[in-house]
Amino acid sequence: METNLELHKQITFDELVKHGLENGANVNNGMPWSWKINGKAITHENDNCYIIETIDGNKHFERGEFLIAYESGLRILTNSINTHSPGGCPM
Image (cartoon, rainbow, N blue to C red; front, top):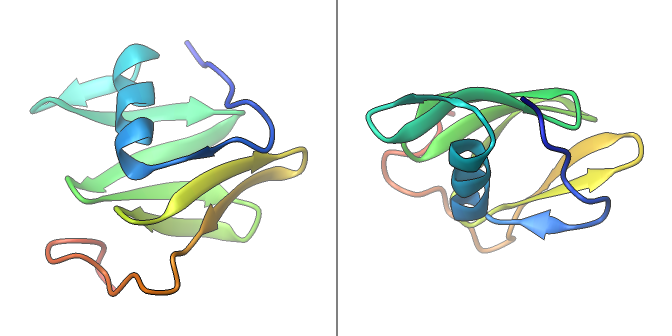
């Protein structure tokens, strides 16, 4: 099952996790593992990072960042003070 993200709505990492848990994602150790939003793949990298199919290609999404849906696809907005959390996405 796929539930679309409302256009122009920003969600946080924790909201993305909640979305996955509530919308049919495969779940492993309490974390959503893989699902789709607006037809785009969301894949668990680790408990602090997802790989998301975005307008700009496959990108890492970490805590402190925002995911937003546009008509043309998903985009990750990076907080300019985000210094990548320990245990986050591999660089």
